Length: 471
Image 1 (cartoon, helix red, strand yellow):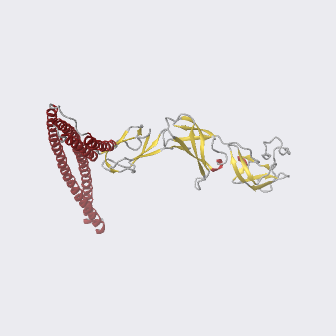
Image 2 (cartoon, one colour):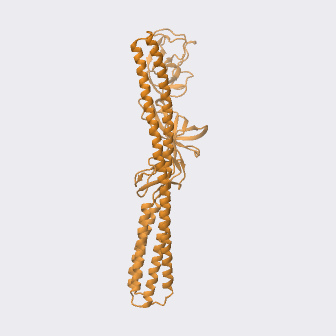
Image 3 (spheres, one colour):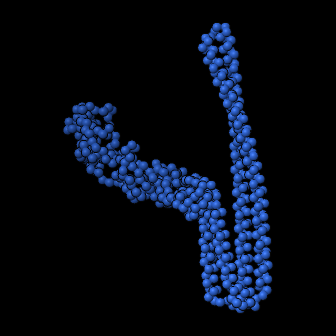
């Protein structure tokens, strides 16, 4: 028997540090290459994008300012146009950022509401549990009270000892104390429900506050964009301007390009907040949950490939000499048979199980096989010629009974080698031509004459090469 294993294991970690916003798969889930499996909170990286956008706007504004100081009305007007273009772009960036911030803020507050509601449900479950405990404690106290009353009556009549009566009274005191604890637990659970309900209301209120604040920020950004676009239209109304000095323009344009490059890099880092599966496979480990701070090099998920599989099987040590790389076989998995071949053989034998391990590779399609599947394996042993072999039935706990020239039994110790379903190799203890006792109603005693059923078979005649004559 064996187990299907994956030869390809991938640990997924982010390229940039950040707080995990979601992990979309769990252990045992199947994933496809390119599938979204986790996301990081983009808030910090969005801040970097906003800063880079501001840098672009500043560089463009500087370029526009240089154009505005060229000494002519035309150049001044062109500078004004560039300034207003930069202002429009900056206002657009601010609007986009305000919208993204609004979505993230509201989503975060809604998540807080969901978490509070979950805690409220847990608190209500705690109340039910405490009530059940109180009911049980009161039942126990009632039973103890009944036993106490009966014990007191029996004691008054002299049917039981004072000690026995005191023991029963002590049990009643214990049950009464347990009831008191259960009452406190029930009251505490109810108080906890009230506190969590207050938290839910507070979280719901925060959602409303967040919406109002973000709506105000978006309205302000839209107003600023409208003002910038109006100023740009005014500047473009006067376009009879002379060209700016080329060197100044080139220097300022280089600054704009550098700022744009920084913006592109920040946007690329923001794109890394989405983590995708690099392979088709199965999730074998999930080591981080939403809210955890993830860092490059620290795995949050471990995936195993479903397309690069092998079977690891343990075999008895007596098969170690006849199983070699390249040996063919069949593996049955969930009722379906696959052709396999031995890829590697680890001949180191486990001291406890007396078994060794082989790895088998699939020769035909294994799309339906999954890592961890149980496999029943049959391997065709590598045949080889051996000097001496006897039927397995002739071997008795490392010993064999042979007959001398007078057909008298002698018990000899042997060393076994490889075996198949019928015969076992004898490495020492026998020589070719020895007559071996294979079947007998009772094991012959040392020196006992054995009737062979035939008279003096020709030794070595009609036998398989290297195998002793059977009596």
